[in-house]
Structure formats: C-alpha cells, structure tokens
Length: 98
Image (cartoon, rainbow, N blue to C red; front, side, top):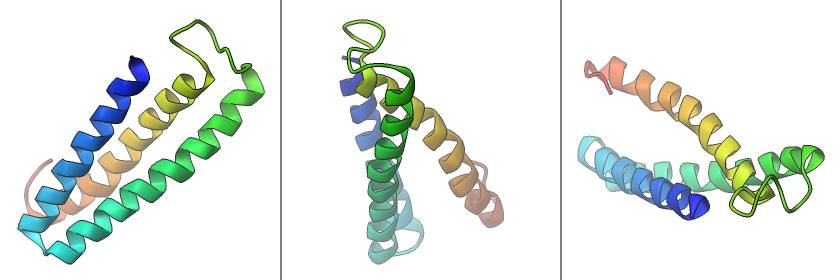
C-alpha cells in the first residue's frame, strides 16, 4: 500500500510538472522535464535499493515495509529535496514562489 501511494504521488508530480512547463515554456520543455524525472526515478531507485539491501534483507522490517518499499521511501525523501531545490530555484528566478 505504501509503495502504491508513493508511485501515485510520483505520477501526480509528473503530471503537475508537465502542465506547469507546458504553460510556462513549451511542449518540448515539458517532455524534457518528464524525461528527467523518469530517469532520475529509475536510477535513484536502483541506487537506493542497493544501499538499503546492505542494511536489510529482502523481507525488510515488516510485511508492509519490505526492502523495496524502504528504498522507495528513501528515494522519495532524496527526490523531495532535489526537486525542491531544482524547481524552487527556477520559480524564484521567474519571480514567483513555489
């Protein structure tokens, strides 16, 4: 359930960024931002999964918090700070606060 919620939040974020960049810049920029998010998600999940598997076995802590869910949570925290910095900088340069 936790993994499904985090995946849904990622899809909502992709749709939000696509709409925002499509309105502010162009459709090409919107697709490039979506591609950036997808690439960072896949590579980041692989890296965080490798790190988590050093500390936990595949069962994880409980039935709901297995190793993949823990790595997805770790990835989401790291992505939050990265995207806050990346898209927050561009919003303040344009004169609006995100």
